[in-house]
Image (cartoon, rainbow, N blue to C red; front, top):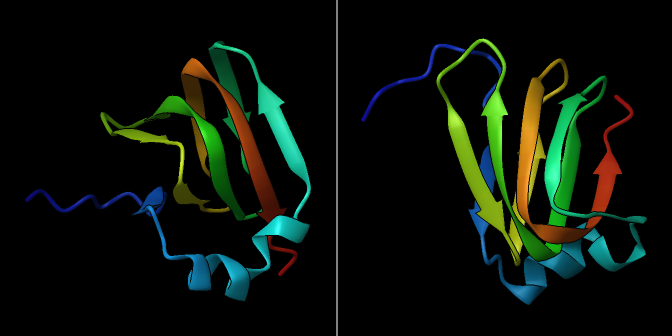
Length: 100
């Protein structure tokens, strides 16, 4: 397995247990959705999100890294990351920005 030296690594936790979602309080987080398409994003704060539905390929700027995630995935985007979301199935997600 290749080690990615980029400090900007997207982490994906596939299908976390309900206990983990409750612990994080995900149902109280705001919701956001988008239709299929390409969306360039820049994270000024760390974002944690939980996808209720959708399918996304995120292409990290300045890297050959492509991360796929979708419904029932818990995904963390580090602060400072720039990427392009290539959404193939409309997204509906809960999200939270880390204020630290």
